Image (cartoon, rainbow, N blue to C red):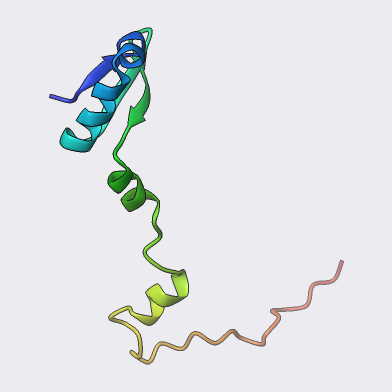
Length: 83
């Protein structure tokens, strides 16, 4: 079962909400019955927001790197069109 806290309860018991986030995982907070916010531990937050690397490094480390695929752009500008 996903831990859910009403906003008023979360405000009154903030330490417990934070401790639960550290021990048990994300804690959902509702306002007027609708899911509104989530409290997560700093470890979970860092894992979610830390970039695993750049797009360039992703392609360089790809199993297809060095497979011989030609990625050079064509110098052809296409056909001429009379306007």
